[in-house]
Amino acid sequence: MVPFPTLLPIQTERLVVRVYDVEDVARIHAALYGDPAVRRWTGGPSTLTETRAVIARYIDAQRRDGYAYGAVVERGSSDLVGEAGLKPLDDVGPEIEVGYAFAVASQRRGYATEVARAIAATAFGPMQLERVYATAHPENAGSRHVLAKLGFTSVPTPRTGNSDLLYHVLERR
View 1 (cartoon, rainbow, N blue to C red):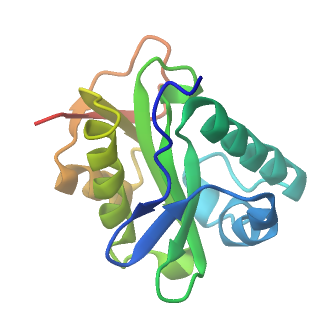
View 2 (view 1 turned 30 degrees about the vertical axis):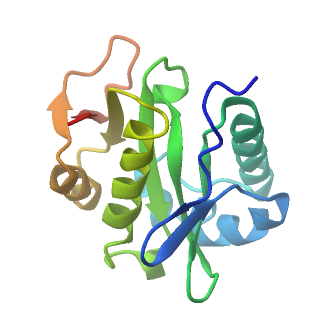
């Protein structure tokens, strides 16, 4: 039994967040996971084998839990430009966090704000969550700016959290 209704796809004016497919692995690896510039805040680039394992976990989580990170594609072109979604905070929960990452060529276009806003609305709407969390590396000014624009506020690092990250929360209004 899935604890939440299947939440993907989520559509915005310019983007669609959809369930990953195993055929996305090579494209998302090239766009995100294998790119040192994109992964500078998340531990560095992954191998293709590591990317394949992460995407398989997201596919399984989507099937099992009804939510996970998914592929972000442009509505007009169907180009895979990033990933976004919900997952257990710090991969352990029980709190849920929103996250996003975009290929370098797709950054600074407002995509992160657009997709994170839609995902938060889904969390507060169909999922009926009272709050969602987000993390950002202290030096990742772009991500911290997105979170501030959406109304996230800083909170102390959870006891089981990563002390290298800043934690934020957005409460249902």
